[in-house]
Image 1 (tube, rainbow, N blue to C red):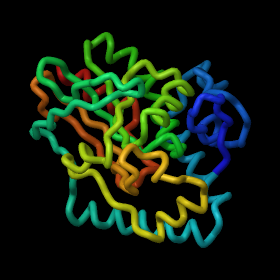
Image 2 (cartoon, helix red, strand yellow; image 1 turned 120 degrees about the vertical axis):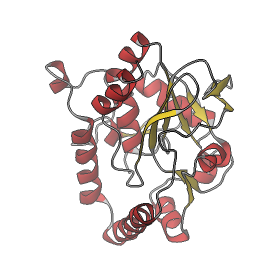
Image 3 (cartoon, rainbow, N blue to C red; image 1 turned 120 degrees about the horizontal axis):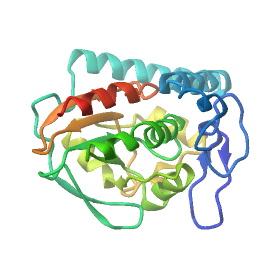
Length: 256
């Protein structure tokens, strides 16, 4: 997968696909506003679909077949036996570190929050999602005094690359070994064949992950009230789909 060169600081490259899924440009960061956003923000779903179409065009056929089969199996399993937090659950409290090793409490009572689980810097769908939340979600969350935190199993260095690339103004926390995601029922171990595909594509999760494990979370967006109780949640075993900013904001407004 093409990547954007990072500065010589130990940062991890950002997929060029996250800059604009139609092309593979070399650019240091995602622009705050892409051309057609100047009139009205493009739906996140549209951006994700363009990224998905790009991967379908560019991935080797054999590797694409492995990833597609694994994805289909995961979706079928989720339909048969859903996992992850549901409305009414109390989200577990945890203390995780941000990209500068500062501790951040997750789901601590006293403040409503949006908790977002993502995979990592190498995933174009994560990059597009966090960039959209920065632009389209965070400003209104601040008006409602609601926190936004994202969580991934990647190292602080990898997290910092995303923070810098997208100028994120919310914490991107490290979940070593996917332990917190596993507590939520949202972690899965990669099958050997899938791990091999990632390796061929240059995604070395042993290096990128804080615990070195080949474990990924299912992407999820969870809204909790000030008591830490889940009021809305979307889980996507299909990692090419994510919670649309408009749906997320509607859930936040419903907190009252």
